[in-house]
Image 1 (tube, rainbow, N blue to C red):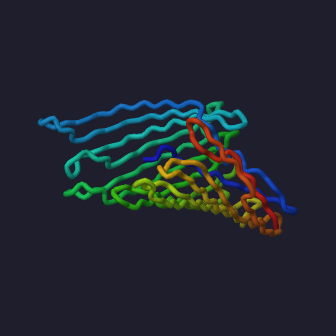
Image 2: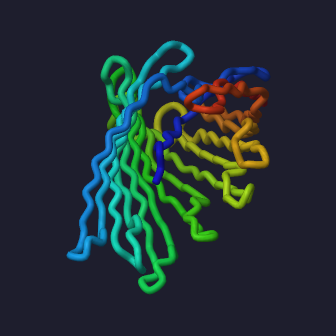
Image 3: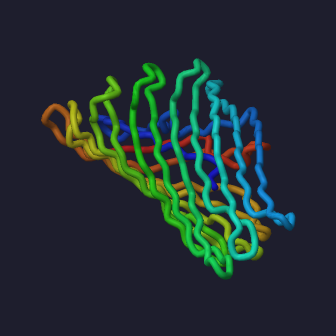
Length: 290
């Protein structure tokens, strides 16, 4: 089950000039958790012999985060996990939920749905498969109108009895300021790599690629691609001790009948440690040139 649905922003920067250095947009600046509360209710079902045969868990997690500019937002995630008797014990078979983020003014900036389903061998009860996905809607923080809509699919592998998410793919549409006119197509994926430390599979790295193609307006035909790889460094017990980040991409800009292609590369980043959130990347700097 996911603890948080990650929302990918669209980076659209068209620079008509020489090499330039720019910081990542605010959507790429991580926020620090300043308050979090969890509320759970669980319904257990038993047979005549007092053996639990199923359960339904409803959970609500409310998280307040504040970025480095002091801007606060509140995210409410609601999930329902259903477990059933399979192969001699009660096991989770599905997890579904919703997530919604509002800024300090109470305007919805992001919302989404997610689901994960598990399948088992009916005789042995062994986990044999998992699948999942979701939808996401992002909104203009000033007008509240729809900015983008994407759907995602998660791919899992069953390794040593664990369902490990190995890839997530998504696609969708970006919208103009009116919230209804489609002006771009969005697609991307994230691949997850694992390693075994102290007998457990832990995340080693994740590589994300996104492509945005402008389909209407003055930038029609422009194509923006970006790939980033985040690495996780750990000690001999598998505990996280730091993060690494690398990235590259290109902007093929078409505007006013002209065309230029820019190459970009991640030039620097900052890793910080928060007592509650752990390690996170607070800032990114990119260099772009043609």
